Length: 248
Image 1 (cartoon, rainbow, N blue to C red):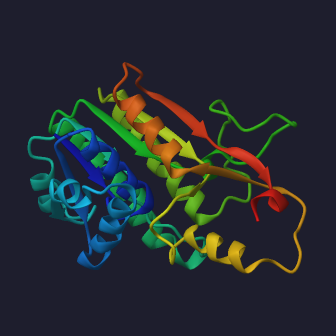
Image 2 (cartoon, rainbow, N blue to C red; image 1 turned 90 degrees about the vertical axis):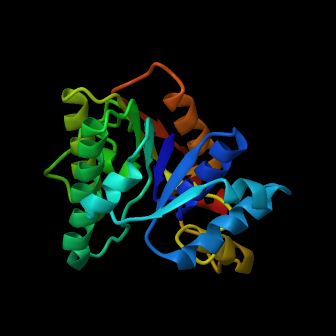
């Protein structure tokens, strides 16, 4: 059975659709019931059999910091997709970011090890890869620079990656994906969904520069492909730099 954390987020919702469409047995963690209709809306936008697919998910209420609840969620689990994260670029939210992104990921990794999970896929971010050094493009080999002006979100996502790599040293098979800014349907009032609203209204002017974008479909396809392969203990970056004038 497959466990998905962050199932009520953009990546998690589209991942759940793909997994249920493939007739996988899926359990998903949620924190708040009010976000479940958003997931169902994603299913409805993608499939006429959305009710059947959505109802096949076993939902479990749990927090990444609630070990007893997580233990129940891990019963009978063989593969884990860890999509849950707290996103904020406000320095005063560092404590919350650390608790969810680092401590929460440590709990997931520890349970993967103790419960005999076969493989973990962790959704990280390009934020952990920093910026270009010596005119070399960012890639899987880019090294974290602790002396750079890293924001709180990037620091905690990097810390979460360290927990995953620690797990691999203790015997866990894992892959990490580092997507760019993820675009996808269903969450129009949250995160990148607001970009579509702004683009529809138009902008009075456009600045020069690029943005690293990737579609949620590409991210989910990459995740499931990696989990169904023999690849382990590697990271993969997914994005395309696109000029802002072309995006909007």
